[in-house]
Amino acid sequence: CDFPAFDSASRGEMMSCSACCCDSTAEAETINAADIKIAMKKVFSEAPETIEPDGSGSTTEPDAELPAVSGGDPEPCITVNFATTPRDKLGITMDLFEESCCFVKSIMPDGKVQEWNATCEKGQDVREFYRLMSVNGFFGTGREMVKRFLTDSKEKNILELVFQKPFEFRAVINKNGQDLGLETWITKNKYLAPTSEITSGALKAWNDAAASGQQISVHSRIIEVDGQGMTGDEIIARMRGRETFELTVLNWL
Image 1 (cartoon, helix red, strand yellow):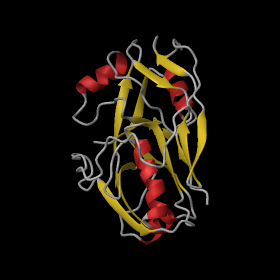
Image 2 (cartoon, rainbow, N blue to C red):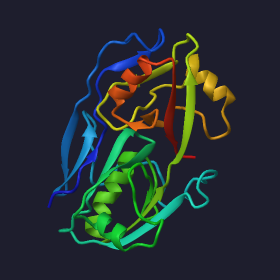
Image 3 (cartoon, rainbow, N blue to C red):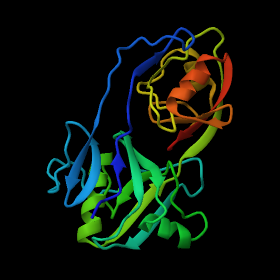
Image 4 (spheres, one colour):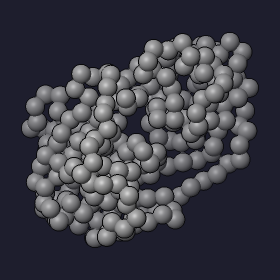
């Protein structure tokens, strides 16, 4: 029984967007994903890390309260419940680019999650970029929750998943001859993710003037430039070629 893939986001060159976002200043580095089998199911994790099925090494208490969420959608979280058997396909891919923000990368047309989406109440469906907050009352790092997802779907035969919706906003960036102040990975993913805090440049100028919750940070995902969805490397190319542009950004508040 193959479990639908949980992916660490594919990473390529490290990019420091300086000199008006024109120069690559960091050495290229590649991290390959390793396919690790767990209890006859699959999870994708960055090498050389592994996920042990006995839960050793976890420091998160399963009965702790979920973190408070404020701002954005008046109902920013949804709860998904369905029964499973060891033979069921869940039909979901999770993105583990950032350990603290494990979100939905894709939903397949023939799994339990899509079955939920087809029958749930309006506004309760699971969508791309929804952040996984807990699995059967347990929350922790992305890999800890993925492991719980795997074991509970087989052993408990029921899943209760809490997802947080992203907060979307637009950021109009004017370089004004500055660099962007952005360090990131060049990837083929459908977003661009800062890899360090923004402390200078045009993005810092935006953050200083932006309303609460609309700052761009390491927890943000840039998904569009001037209203066009594109991959991370395409977003970088578009920002390089323009002095002023509008970014569509997702935050989880």
